[in-house]
Image (tube, rainbow, N blue to C red; front, side):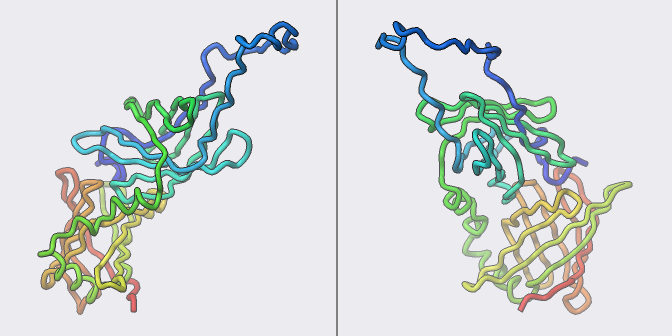
Length: 276
């Protein structure tokens, strides 16, 4: 079984630092007076900063994967990066980046997912990055544009996907099963510990987040949380995953199955914390 956080053949993001073609020893001789007085000899403009938030789409399978990068300058032309996989509700994966001339290199360690790289060329006006995302043996084109992180995350709010007919079942989940639920997926010789944090929001809707403890504590948003009678359904379409189970033992246990990419695994969740 592929890692839960990798629904497509790629492994996720990282760019190796690449120098510009032809870079090497530079002539340090001072320019001649003739050159300095000649208006036809233009000084190349300095590259714009990449600091800020950038968004783009990876065509990784039938559904484009929306990704975002938040670059924070740490020193000259070097950046701390928070990576978001917006469709998957996965946020704040740490990465690093460097800008050499106009070539941006980003490196992201996905732990079990491996190393991924993004290398892009910054446009002269500093508004566009055109490059490629390399993951394992696969390479995909990726164009990034400046954006607003809060808006990008809001646009992917899973609860916008709730139908009116689902709302009563969503609210029932918030009323009855809010809290922390833990379980372990037995995948042959290995196990994956997962935690579902289910929360009733002030406006009454129920939200949930899944944490994969053995995959870097990565957090994934749950798109649908529905409780119909005793049957709970948790849907995570960003990773093609779904849990269906029945409440047991007075509401302290849920026995069910995890479905993902055509595979099925038994999964029992134990309530370890109750939200007020």
